[in-house]
Amino acid sequence: MTNNFLLSHRQEEPEKGILYLVGTPIGNLSDISSRAINILANVSLVACEDTRQTKKIMNRFNISNNLISFNKENSLNKISKLIAELKTGKSIALVSDAGMPGICDPGEDLVSEVKSAGLSVICIPGACAAITALVSSGIPSSKFIFEGFLPKKNIDREKILFEISKNEKTTIIYESPYRLKKLLKELLEFCGGDREIIVARELTKKFEQHVGNNINDVLTYFKDKEVIGEITLIIKGIKKENNQGINKADLKKDLHELIKAGLSISAASKYLAKKNGIKKSIIYNLN
Ligand code: SAM
Image (cartoon, rainbow, N blue to C red):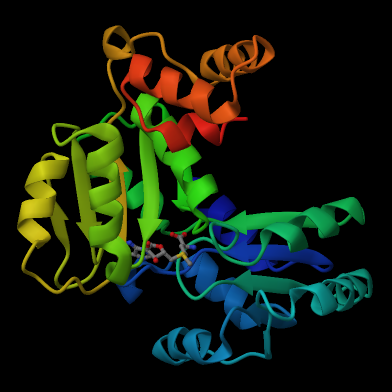
């Protein structure tokens, strides 16, 4: 009974005029679902971050379909065209190079526009590096914050690093292997070497690796190594009782009060930095 229901449900897919978000593997091609294969084979067209990448998946499962490119560079132009296609009753699958479309990949804007146009979006779930790393880390997974890639601009980056240092929830970060050591050094500066962390490398692939246990250990491990492969970091939150009551809102309020009392922003930041044991630039940038 249940099997029949599942089968008939699948055979009815894809339906006309629907945008399907299709999760694809993050390394191990066997992680694709039969439902995803069915959708990729039978929609009217597949919008891909990189058609060459998606072609590899299609070839592996002996399916072919009409692939078009949809990426950061061309998404603005393509969204209205894709919506027009959906309105004519065509079904579209959106895939990224790996994992769930919409997670640090183009897709977010398309989904929002498609929904605003009154059309339906259905997700065919698949692997996501953030969740795969989180659940295998041993670090609490019930409450977490996903930061994706940290901003490159110093001022924005320091703000987020500061938030992570005070965060009671687990933090998930994506990082390129070339920038891992720099990020670990920044985390050391903001969070201290004892902070628990797992660097998950090459998840679901042949050389999958989970490096821990704290920031000092991980820095030592990678010190003389060339970092290669894809990287996701999981950072444990701090205990509530260790949070010393410092938070961004309080600091901002203190900063504004000192400025109002006549101190320059530089002097006020210096004073608060010393008082709270954190970098002056972090306070300065809160203004
Ligand atoms: N949409 C993808 C998802 O659902 O996870 C993420 C795409 S984002 C552009 C790519 C980043 O995800 C990589 O730079 C890396 O930080 C992380 N990532 C992807 N595959 C991974 C893997 N197999 N192991 C560890 N991290 C991975």
